[in-house]
Image (cartoon, rainbow over all chains, first blue to last red; front, side):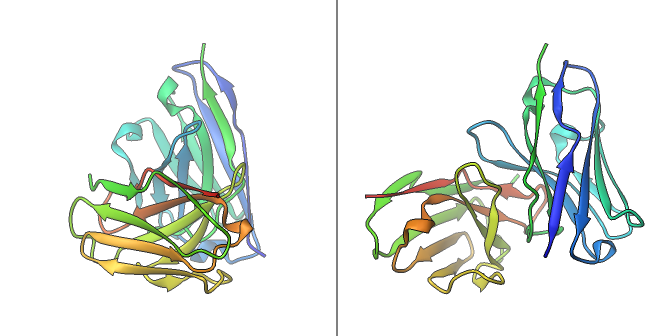
Length: 116
Length: 107
């Protein structure tokens, strides 16, 4: 059974940093593109970033480019999202997902709140 | 960015009814379209990809169709467990974008 478990969320002040992790199990992690998708409270879904199987290719939405970094450790079957210079508009539930185009499987999500 | 417009934003239907949700892209997305179901308090789940391919384990009462800029999700014989929000997503061009969602309730 595919399992994606996110961690690392919380309350953080604007301008500070946070690093999310996603522990994967139940599938061969190194064979899958991975992505982060977020959802602001009572809002729709927004794709954030994607990473290729080996980590050599990454893509970001414009609003997080230069502030967020997606990475992976295939030996640990873990996906990461380093979030720097956080803004109030980054407040959302962040989901770890499989897939580089459509998103086959999703974690339960982790809440990030950016507020002073 | 490609804009995805869903309609209706909400709808109410009876058990056993057939429901259709529409999704319009601002340009041709060449069937690069997925549909997701999100139940209250849960994470989204993939239903359909490539506009009309059913994801593993998804009941056959769900189906997708369309081409070009116009796509639809149909739910035959509505069940109580189908109460959820539904989102379309294009993956033809970056950034991948989602529709605003359709909230489906029971009448």
